Image (cartoon, helix red, strand yellow):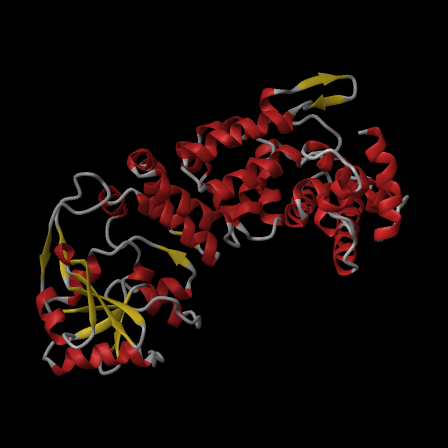
Length: 447
């Protein structure tokens, strides 16, 4: 295949330096894939016949980091750009289904490409040789499919994380997964139990934020249930409710797809109804799920803990899951009070989650509820643009002012400030120093 890839100057310098020393060198993997897709690569990796010590010698006048010398990887920093350069290699046995026990360096680029996970990642390119594509990755890229290099079962047995990587690439790129690759992923999904929680969390987060997350998690739900079995009860659980035309799992995946592709929102959408199967009741009006937000939060907490999700993300996901079933009046007063309790960013995320939730409800109610959600988001934007007072910090009076007026120090100050904020948000007191001072006198007297 004849093509030209615009290689950044530092990477071009690395290739030229290796060529000048007599070693073939190529860009390889994801940067080639992304360039063929017409996307600007974020990372540029190189591969070469030079051994690690020879790479270090070639770049002795640059900052060199021995990233993974035992596996043949050296990082060279050129013009502040870190470039990973790896020796052509053949991997040994993968006893732990994650990393090779040993590697053997080789002079064959094709041998090196044969050890890689998917055909779209097993391409190399050098300006003087063009594209090297022994496994027809360019064809699979054009046909928008993820295919393992060689035998899919062998590739997944080498590294179980590749199962999630296949799903992640298919979700992010909106590709299909080739039948033999998909069958092997389902058959060998148990390998994921031996993979570190942090790596699984990282892959799942990218998968969830992909354009095809709904399709992939529909087709490969069993893979997800292998690492998060607490989600399995949602699958096929009929809600028997006129407001819902989908089972809990299908509703959940449609909510995921409707949420903005941000990690917190996609995780919250995935987990928001996890508690429904555990609190189902039914009467003459149909099915009900009282307190499901609370139970969903408990399940979400276990999931976040299992995956060792970072604390900041987990805390926000749990907050959104807990509050996702808030009944929104549409009044500015409710939005202001929500902002005062959880902050403007969390309030916006809660409204976005609500919008995704109603988008996945029955068609008879969908348009009206989505319009209502959009109106509340617009109201929040308007309040922010007006710099409306929605937090104690925006009050024209401070705690020290209250103390000077005779308010007891300590918790009393907070109580008075919060009471003043409530009055301002309700519109009964203006947010001016004079008006707040008068209102504060009565509140201090009560204290």
